[in-house]
Image 1: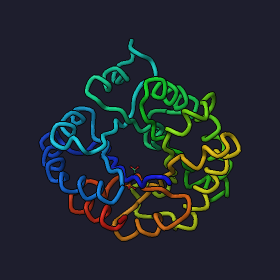
Image 2: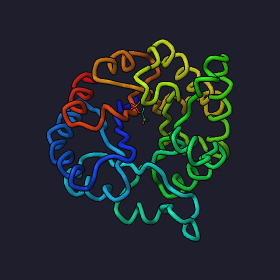
Image 3: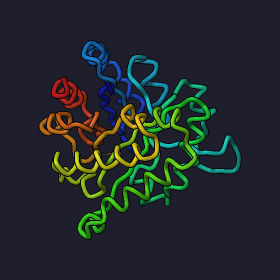
Image 4: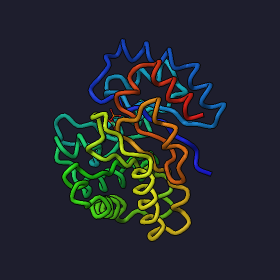
Length: 250
Ligand code: PEP
């Protein structure tokens, strides 16, 4: 049985002070989520990672990115050792904004996923097609390439530790969420690809949907066979809306 997961992606939002207010406000939510067997967490900006840890140690905390090299001349980047030093063990990899603005390729994501797994950390690997690809009916072709490259040279033991997030680019931050039918169809396709490669292990891999998820639509995704939770941007920023998301997952 796969545990449900709600992960908020804060992108470049919230100062450390605003993060502290949210983290303190989320203490009761962590208890509620635990009671109902749901994992909840957030991915704040780098400077706020230790702030969440300090004020709500029960919230899962993910970095929004990480470099695959242990150290070196990579201006503006962050290393696995730096994250581990402050007890951060999760990282989002290949978010569409990084694929679009930072030329993040699936091959580069694979290097990051392998580096994280080698350090016993959890990657949340984002995949998804652009609007043009969706309109040309190329969704599954794109997803197949992204899954194949992202999971290259990853053992089945390690594959079970990866979380996949299906995020159609046309639905991120647009208010145009994919229908639960479309999302389930693609997530089931992803699980099928993982089953071809890893057999039964695919049943353990958590697959999230992301893209304009709101308290009013989260339930429809969670009631499908292959969607195990959500990666949420805008609606994860206020504590009230985060609480409603959790309540509607229960
Ligand atoms: C995201 O940032 O991954 C995301 C899905 O954003 P939003 O929920 O705002 O569409």
